[in-house]
Length: 202
Image (cartoon, rainbow, N blue to C red; front, side, top):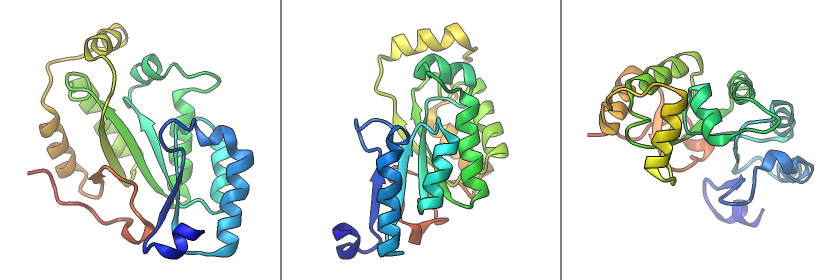
């Protein structure tokens, strides 16, 4: 509350850095969100998550959660699974969380962990275009994947085809042209800026 009271367009987030996924701590996070919202309607309450537990996420939205950022290395199930190695959930659960948030008109960003040669492969580009067509998210936050690139390429090639890369800059430029409503950035925006885009990549 002290942060929200003092800072214009304040954002508070659960699930920063190495805290672990906040969906697994819903017993603490849910009452915390509710307590904030009982005190004030100001500020933006965000959740950084893997989106693995849609029913739990729904409870957090009921408590007053404003936005989510879901981490993905790929929008292809086989590549996602090979990297995240999910336990007790599937890629389909992540998509359910995204769709549920969109149905509730919440701000949805993906934390898109990218690696040249994989993220900008024609197959992944086509999958991203299809994903954005089916799931009209609000924002892509482009982040470098902090993983051995040779090992990552090897693991991804074992589970999915990877054609000749088109270039990450070209990928972003083409996505901006085809999906102009999607914002591109690096940080979770306050609700006062929901729906406002940054300048396109030159």
